Amino acid sequence: MSEVEEGVEEKMPFTSHLEELRTRLIRCFITVGVGFVVAYGFKEKIFTILTRPLISVMQQGEKLIFTGLPEAFFTYLKVAFLTGLMLAAPVIIYEFWMFVAPGLYKKERKLLIPIVILSTIFFMGGSLFGYFIVFPFGFKFFLGFASETIQPLPSMSEYLKFTSKLLLAFGLVFELPLVITFMARLGIVTVPFLKKNRKYALLLFFIGASILTPPDVVTQIMMALPLMALYEISILGARLFGKKKTDEEGSDEKTGLQESDEPASK
Image (cartoon, rainbow, N blue to C red; front, side):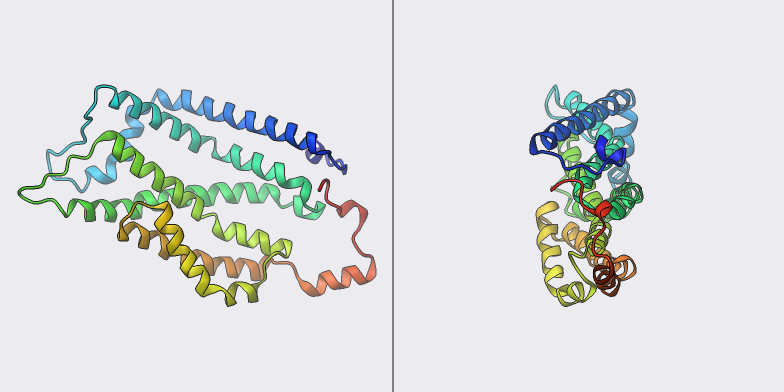
């Protein structure tokens, strides 16, 4: 938000928040559109890279097919759009955090740039984990059902739908340590709370994996297990960067909250 970026500490009316939301959404759409145009020029190469994990475990001579005349065309359009979305991810993440920035204290807003950078790294790391680790094992498992009477004939559209959903899902779930650490920094959660509710988090991970991934046990487990590891990393992050209770109490007793640290809006 312009007021936040310029360091102006002012309260904003609700209509201004709506206007700011519209402006930031327009920026995101424009960035995705530019990414789409750029990616469309390389759509065949991008789709070839995307299909590499499947091709590597298929039998020699087996290929992807398309069963409808416009299927290949629309598949390439979707490939370009998803690539544009991935290219625009840093901008989208930045716009999101800057939109919520007015509700934060001044010292917390100083963390936004590192958070934007780390959010992008974690998102890309999750997508790469799905591509290099989950895809080869998952595709090999699925193709293992082939027999002398059953031949796999994966189509372009179905493959793209399957892989794009997984890539986005893994990218999002890998944001978990950053989100929890940031919540701990704000004092919303604490390390004892995270440890106490570890078993409930485990249950939620498997439920979330069953929702975000296709209905098969392999991909659900391969998402739930990293989530468990990420949760432990989140606890460590909360321990290192979480709000210190003693410092907060000492600050309140001496000077209270400074005027410059008041949220810019509510």
